[in-house]
Length: 195
Image (cartoon, rainbow, N blue to C red; front, side):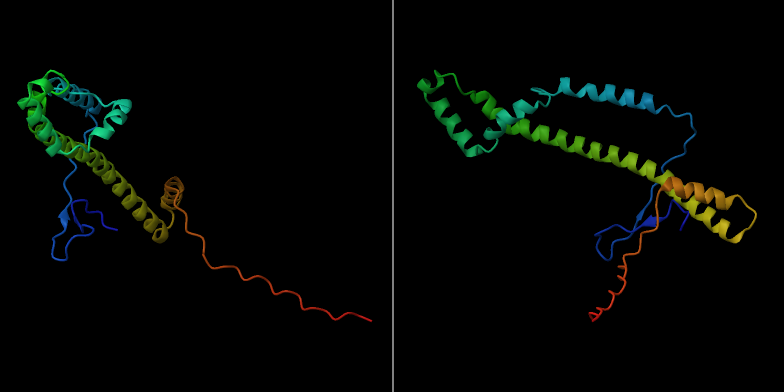
């Protein structure tokens, strides 16, 4: 088991000629980091986003159900309705369709798509940052456990055996049970009836 945390790892499903990805340095931990303050600052920054986005609506499950049926209306239909309403005063008197909003929808959707894409990237990277930061410690722990087990096997009179046993118990990984089926004992031979 390698202890080099700055090694490279193969990427699953990568093309045959693709180089391995170098593992980034997770950064030094001093113990003085104030992660709680980082969260507070980041959340305050994110809270500034909704007010600057026009027509922002917080997600609401009932409203999401209510608008579900309107999501598949084709753009050609909207363009047709807009053209008819704009060209016919009697239809405008219904006051049921906003041509101004209809004209703005494609631009609004394109702008929101850019924001949503960036937010998805940030979400994915935030979750990955947590996973990678944790994995670094997890890997260090597994390496230490492996070395401790090896030392316990070759060096007598050390505390390594007890330490490895404690670590192994906490890890909770047990050897898989053998999948070989037990052979049932042979059935007793039938006895002939005695007369």
